[in-house]
Length: 478
Ligand SMILES: Cc1ncc(COP(=O)(O)O)c(C=O)c1O
Image (cartoon, rainbow, N blue to C red; front, side, top):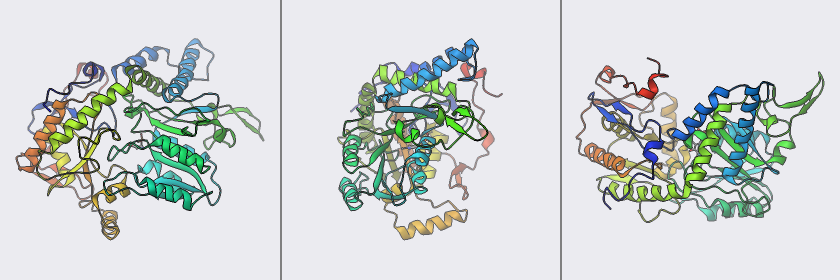
């Protein structure tokens, strides 16, 4: 495949804010910033920014004012709930959309409210982000289906666990797509299995929403997704919002964990009657701008067709895997063959033989202007599994880390792609990786033991401050 085989998806170049931003490299040159870290957060869509700017003149208190601006703000905020319901195909008679900060908060909320009897089991997988694991540990015994050596869900193990704990599994919780390997889970098949065992299913769709259409299906469909959680900042909409979409009964049957303004209907000194949904679950003044931004992003994703973006991304992944093969000493984790594309999103984790992951990431950033992430990506057990770190070694490294020396922490480098990335971005990555493996990088780097990060020895003042982009000039601190 040639570099011209996969262009930029439709008109994305003009739709992403900051795509042509130039930032300084270690040698002082300015270079276009190449963002290959979309699994962490995506840059804003122009349509999202436009929607926010259109809304701001009307911005006022939501559900708390009689003035016309308050009415407009309230209507826009309420409507955003409906847009998110539509985005995942949820029936709003039986399901609610609750806005919060992000996926992590949404899962925590559900973990407080989901009915879990004393001996209940939450069935999860080894592949989860910490945000879909730690909240459940507090409330139930968590058992995890393991992963195969290449990092796919071991569905036989999940079936076995459902049988072993028959009658006690209250919830199955899985990520829609892995933030480490990009593997997409068979969520509807897993829903069918969960329901057959009397459990409900939660899908952590943080990595799915901007890459695959989501359809929770009708409530009485055996493949229905009972709960879905999303982060707007991974859907091209910053401004700090996430959503929990799911069965109303769970929230109606118990009192909200956060209480206060907005959550109530009637209050006397001795009595409280909670408001209806979703108000009772959105304590305090809501983040109206965040909700409007998230709804705008959802509309773009629905209109553009996530499927179109999916096909562009699949071409990029195939191209990346093909090109990465030319880097000697590279070890790609998960699926590394370009043909295995149907069950993955554009996340590729790798290591370079003999070069620490943190050093690779630092050189890519300082000398290539390429943003990636390294480490364990908030999924330490899964990354340890993929790396083949023994439990004894993991314990030793954990002790070292807890003593404040994180220099030997295991990890990987991760690139994660989005609809606006191009083959040129990937060519630049591969060229830099070849330079690294051949020792043709310029900086002298030293590791900071406390963080495990590498920083250039050259005084940091070599870096010029970012140039003021005309759009940013008005808002960036000088
Ligand atoms: C699969 C997955 N779940 C949950 C999260 C947490 O998302 P947030 O930080 O937006 O709460 C992430 C973040 O990377 C993720 O990738």
